[in-house]
Image 1: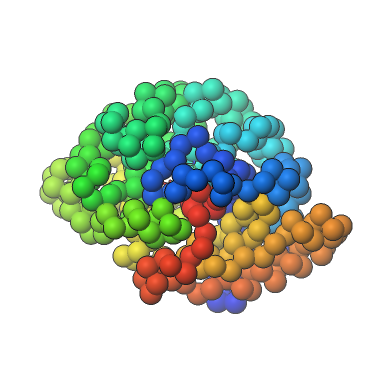
Image 2: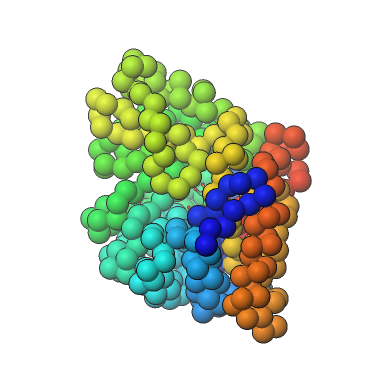
Length: 332
Ligand code: SAM
């Protein structure tokens, strides 16, 4: 069975925020107030998550990404990933992480069947990194990235949220870093999601300007040829720098609408199904599940929820003010 929304888009990809807790407080992602965190009893158990993901898989969602908060803070995540990768209806399980705990977990994740990993890395300068993450340690994260490469997670993608006047001067250094370490590099436009995202968006730099800086550094335009094919599940446009063999992507949530090919739904740690990153709609699945709903009843709710997916995000119209999501609880 295929999940198709009311605009004909086929939904094949689920992002699961396994926790809203994080060991970093990136200034574009969360305001840093721990009182906003969800109570423990409100958070889905791993068994509940596994059950819901199984129902999604039966509905044709074969690709699942673990995100957060910081997913590696969630106890027994490796076990859940191992259970999911054993299912014949799940094609791929991937992970988004800040890599602070990746040195410890990379090999176990690979052995559990994790395919690939996306890592947030917004600066290669210790002080800037600590500033953006509000206390994160760059050396620990670099060791985590190294561990992912050594473990054979493939590809390792590094995501940099570009902020004018904060880290945009590091674009060349990031290109060099990706080339040296054999990573896929993706630049992300700031998104005005939640209070933190709206603040960071005052440093917004559009994809065209990011790309100009890349081109200024890597040489003539002709060596940075646009790749048409999608690489992964998402909205990035990829470019291949032929001289260095480095793949560079740009996620332009604001300046280019990618909604017409949106293939995803998001499940929050407290069991809400979010239809769109840039709109407020969501459906609670935890309540019905804890009240005894059968798998068939949950499946019907999910099919119904998919029909509520809006045509497009509202970043441009509202500057994100209509988005009451905090990115840290939603998983990006
Ligand atoms: N802790 C994990 C990590 O660091 O990748 C997973 C969660 S994080 C919310 C997922 C992604 O969302 C990261 O790549 C992060 O950079 C991105 N993100 C969070 N807030 C954002 C914002 N306001 N604009 C653009 N990207 C954002």
